[in-house]
Length: 328
Image (cartoon, rainbow, N blue to C red; front, side, top):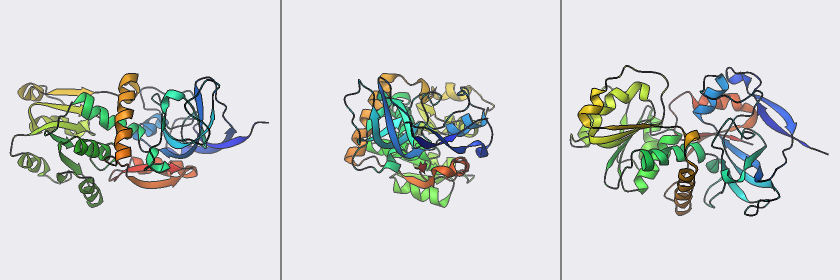
């Protein structure tokens, strides 16, 4: 006889109120699959765009949101040999429109999306790895190819991706400049080891960034809000500087001369299109950092699964300092 579990279900696209807690059938793993007992699920901005129906790729309705989670292995498919029941794991499902979604008591995923959870990390921290840390790692290592001794500007350094970027850049020997928009956020960025921290709500913060580099500009920018900052970013770049666009909430008027003058490179991307080999490389690099303590996810708020609507409001309200997670 099949049991049931609790899961958040979305039956129509809309506001946070469409996230409903329901009973659904327990999950059974097929070949190459693992069922994970979820203890915590990460909440990411992309999930709010999917829920509202404004994202580029939408899942068929009804669906359970979420691509990031941590918990223990509940059951494995017949051909899965390197995990067993009870193993602590973290999960990142690369395509958020496939799989069963992490806002639930159980999640069924292909085995390649399941990774051992390093001992120093809690389940809440494990749920904060996938999207934020892989996004930050890719932006720094693959897209801007930031090198030791270079200066990296992290715009919006107090959010999930920002915290990850500051930690990864520090561990790689880069000089880190971070921005945030609240006292709490600024303090959080300092705590993560940024060498210079500026309030992006002030009129003069861009001048202060240039001054901090002795006027020479930054080598790489991790850009969370391209619709606001991209035109200004070229003024902040050193010659042959690189920008990785992580987020943008709309279009902008754009002058390509900024790129020409600085001989700059601008890269964009989505995690869902990241090559499987690059994901494997990123997971190996990140797990090493979690094990040796150079990387440590920061949790800003733990919200019960039944209050998923509140988690979506929180993640989009700005002034973050770390990661919002749902606890199951």
